[in-house]
Length: 172
Image 1 (cartoon, rainbow, N blue to C red):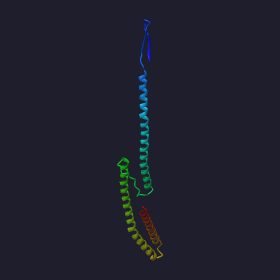
Image 2 (image 1 turned 180 degrees about the horizontal axis):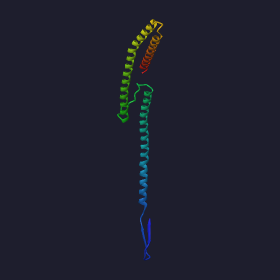
Image 3 (image 1 turned 60 degrees about the vertical axis):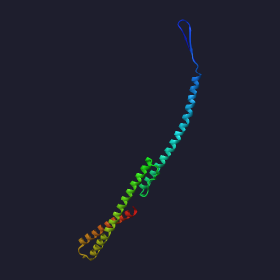
Image 4 (image 1 turned 120 degrees about the horizontal axis):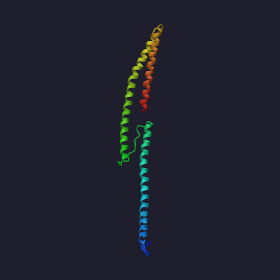
């Protein structure tokens, strides 16, 4: 590369330097840059793909377990890998929460079942007494008969309610 200037006295000023080393250095830099950056970029993309796939696999497993639980399967648990990652710790926490929830639901089921059993027998006995009373009641007192029949109907409603509680306790 040469710089040319015409001086005020009519002389020529020439300044030049050789660009061969500069161009060779620039070419070596580009080759080295591409030689390092292309494999690095491919490696980063592959690592990103595998990390993403692994994370999405764990998230899908958590979603699958959550769907099963929403559909009533309280025995379902989120799979744990045992690698102590944040998602694995989250899975363990969710599983402990599900264990506690299952225990509480079991307690509610047992209480409902016990209440239904304990109250169904006295209700059946009260209904039988009302039916016996109705059978012996004088036919002339229609108002009292209607009240006794209404009492029997109320007891039947309560028995149906407790039978429904029993069905819920069995399905839970």
